[in-house]
Length: 303
Image 1: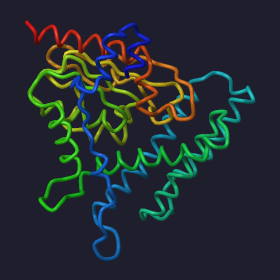
Image 2 (image 1 turned 120 degrees about the horizontal axis):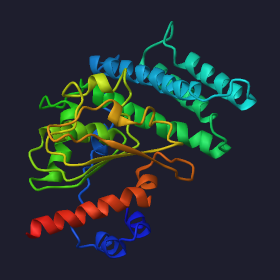
Image 3 (image 1 turned 45 degrees about the vertical axis):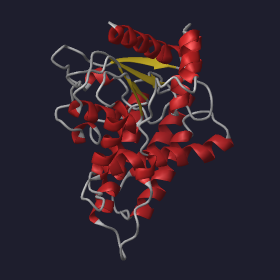
Image 4 (image 1 turned 90 degrees about the vertical axis):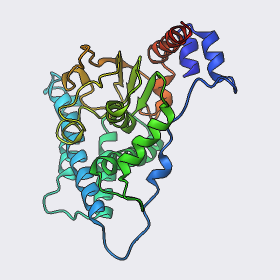
């Protein structure tokens, strides 16, 4: 993010951001909550089954989203168009759950097969096609476990509640700029509906929020809308981000009482795995508005 701020012309603020005593940023870390649950006897739990169902549905919609995007492109007589159409048809067949086993291992294998096939849509090399599907499946699995909302700890708190609590702890009770990535965009949207402090700027990166048959209907509250205390919302998506299908959030999110809706912008990154938060944050178009919002918040608090 500091690199992106420098690229946007905010060098002095970027230097403050990386200072060890700056205290400007807080990370809502919850990866440890996604450690594999301890096995309790044989067989899968109900929560496992619910998460598997969500993951299977995510695969179907992921392929459907890319197929819809492809169909909107003119050129069915073009050889490259036809090649991509064949890849998508193969991915659709792999994602189809009809007559297929539904256990965790079976669903994970299917997820890996689907994401590996989707990688063929881009002219990436062998290393990329081996590494990226595993990263994609990891991200999709985390989304499915969060949205299944069935995993409980010893105190009875569900996984999604514990994840949102981490964000509340990081935010505290003062106005804060919120930058959310991937599953974090789902977490942020739900948590900010619960949070009482002002959010001058919400930034979402590589978001799956507009997956209309899986993610959107499971969001809380319904219908999806901008949290009341969010004053501005910027959404960014990369053209090569395979997870960010249907990226224009303003089509699927209602405004809050102040009329705030997400404003989506496309960015273009280079490299093997453009879905990473680091790729997005290094963009001047992303980091620049974050720096400006943080500086404005400081001025507002000083007065």
